[in-house]
Picture 1 (cartoon, rainbow, N blue to C red):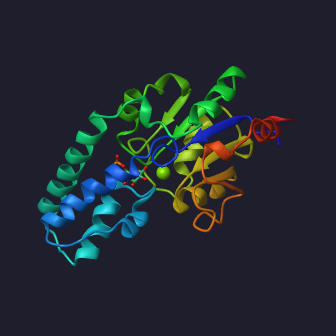
Picture 2: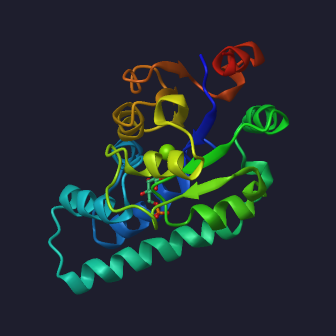
Length: 218
Ligand code: BG6
Ligand code: MG
């Protein structure tokens, strides 16, 4: 399929940080006097921190002054960082290493394309920083997924045409961003949720070496 560069989303693809985002948002919701469920947390995948807080306040029917809004953004992130602090390599999702090693052994460029502003510290914590030839995260973009910006910047940093890039994503908005960038989208997660992806796998254990070889073959 002639793919010559691979781009990974972070949260939900490399590590299961969605559970920590959830706990931090739930704590804030509870402090503000309402519930926040795991189903509602699905809406937050791939979505920027600011947009998540807007959705959360909508769910709770809470209106905020700019000052409160800024304070709650900081508070949520501080709680989230407490979870991140305790992370180590054991939290890397199954067979992520298999795919990364396959690519590294063949000198195929690898980038991170994440909405998170905490991407670098997380990669450092789980000891994966050295695998990535380029990192594009929430600090580098002006437009959120499904806008293709994050992946197009990543392709540029890898000096690869978008059509030759592949994206692993667990969020609907992320799959749409990859498709909008004209990249090959691979959904990691439930096929019903990620139906817009070109290919779908529940996790990396379902991705075979044969499949990877097909992707990179001319
Ligand atoms: C995405 C997550 O990767 O990053 C979202 O899927 C999260 O749930 C977003 O809101 C922003 O993350 P952070 O770490 O900058 O708050
Ligand atoms: Mg994700």
